Image (cartoon, rainbow, N blue to C red; front, side):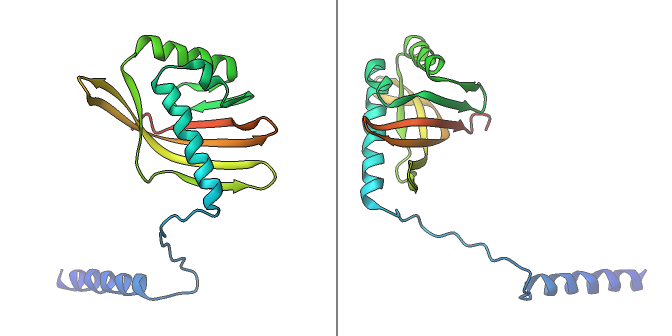
Length: 167
């Protein structure tokens, strides 16, 4: 029995040492703080995001419509895929059914990356909360990805991926 315990400890120590030793096959994973590739592009997209969701928080569907391309694809992890018309119907339904719901951006969560000859990718996190007596309650935090296309008529969101709803 003592022999088995000694072998177990010896193997455990060898595995630990080998996991700490540097090898050519290991990949070091590090995280670095986000820094925009283009500050001008970042500022543009963050501004557009702010204007879009200001309209959403006012339940101004007419203004919101101007931000989306007519070939919109809206992917939602819980609801599936919708196009432009269905997405606008969904916005109107939410405005009617949940009039106190507000979108609150998670500060510092937006990242923007250029897409050559097309536009930009925006990723971030936001909360949807009920506003009761000036206090945000019942908040859910979700992730989003927007593909912005630069058109002759301005910037338009052509793709949305909304996810993290099942967590």
